[in-house]
Amino acid sequence: MKSTDKPSKNFLTRSKVAIATGLVAGVMGATLFASGPLFADSATVNTSARIAGSLPDLTTMIKNNRSAVVGISAKHSAPKLGQGFKGNGNQFKNLPPGLEEFFKGFPQQPRGYDFGNRKREGHGSGFIISKDGYVVTNAHVIDESDDVTVSFEDKRELKAKVIGVDTLSDIALLKVEANGLPFLELGDSDKLDVGQWVVAMGTPFGLDYTATQGIVSALSRSLPKDTYVPFIQTDAAVNPGNSGGPLFDLDGQVIGVNSQIYSRSGGYMGVSFAIPSNIVKNVTEQLRTDGKVSRGWLGVGIQGIDKSLAESLGLPNTKGTLITSVSPSSPADKAGLQAGDVITKFDKKDVNETSELPVIVGNTPIGKKVAVSIVRAGNNKVLDVTVEKLKGKDDKPVIAALEKGSLGVAVSSLSDEEKADFVNKNEGVKIEKVMANSAAEEAGLRSGDIILQVGGKSIESPAKLKATIQQAKADKPLAILLKRGDQSIYVAVHLKS
Image (tube, rainbow, N blue to C red; front, side, top):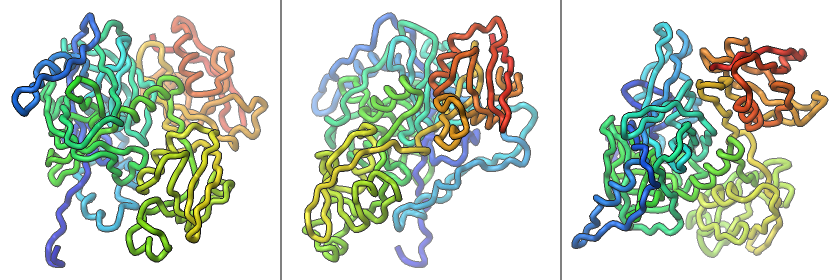
């Protein structure tokens, strides 16, 4: 590019619900609106597509699976006057050299005006993964929502409970109260090959149940700020409204969740990215069980190795990842890893590219001792590392939807420092956010309050709070023991009926 040329303003749009409505700012997105599936009596049938000549016949596969694709509507309270843009400020930081210009110019909608009780509403796609109503979508589709509605193909709409949100993988798990629903099977994304036919389904621009086809263009793509997802790249058309929708193989298996596009205009330009189904399986299982996702942590800064750097370090090739820093008291520090070491294997898995290590470490069970193969000053070594839990980044508070019997708070686990003065150090969760018009707001609960007990039962985790609230009766007040500052107080809460 000549110095006089203006750089093109390409940007990665992360399907962030309804560009025109100015939904949640601060996440590079391209969200997909959608409606959803019929209440069928039988589970979705996965049938191999017929091959007509050299092209696949997709009609049967689409008919058999479209009823399990749903629309997601997420309502957000308008920010108060003067609140302004709420992005985290990290959208365009720490990008690889030369990519800064590609991530500028995303058309964020203005925020900061509150006209009464007006709510902003955005739309995306999702799909059912169990007959009893568990639904998968993108985390950015329902981010900071006050309530979420799932719409089906027969035009029914049901309020959804947010079971859990994992921002690092951009996956959210919802639950609607229904049974006998059609559902989709999650396939094995590790078996994908470049050139394989795929079909994306969702509601781009509000056009119900749009299906687009293409091929797998590349595998294990690493994108800025998404180090824990080895994306599937496809050329299937994905546009605003497709976010959270399924990416199918020809057998009707979901092999990915449509999440991002690379674009100059904000619309489709031939490059789309999906979260692999094997990542989705792991994340949804943890969200269903614990309401959050735990990942392994090594505690190193890393970078790639080019030919010149390999030569300067005396390496035979560019395979591996170079350690640039080691966090004090981290698993890497305890194991003796040093800046300048090159990691070539982790837990018997080859590390050829820098993007591979975070995914491997993140999927390693907490507390597992693994062998790490390194090259140090030209010599091969193997060190044992005990993987610890990645803290902070993946502990997205669990937000209870505003529905019957809900409390209406977002809570997070307490740190060891926050529990230091507690008599019972296993007790307590912290309120991160109180939903508008919720039972918690009406009872006077505040952000920063620590919930110790509910109805006389100790609360040790967000999952325990959720289960306790679900079991409580809405016909009488519920006593909640709080720690607010230095004081402990009881508050009577009337759950929404």
